[in-house]
Image (cartoon, rainbow, N blue to C red; front, side, top):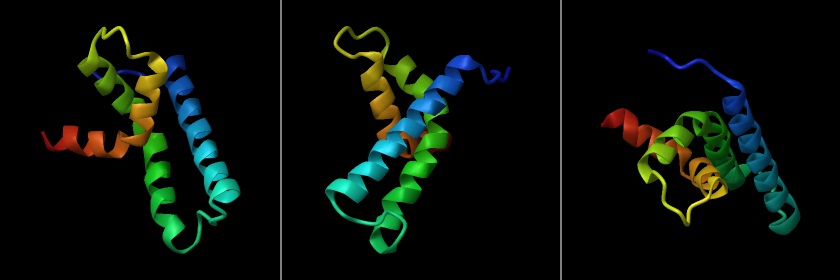
Length: 94
């Protein structure tokens, strides 16, 4: 049975957009690189894909780690955002 898109999925998507905003500010303000030109475009495409895969990957990562006491939900969100496309492709191949 397919799970419906609920309010918590919307919050995870918003956290992904906030993460992308943080990436954009890091690239433009700290590294002084335009993320939409030349080599800055490659990680930008990766993190845009990551925003959309984060919803599915969050549940995969949350199921795998279980109730490990030193991992918080913020850590799971961060891992889901940064490694989202890689985990998503790995799960689809297996």
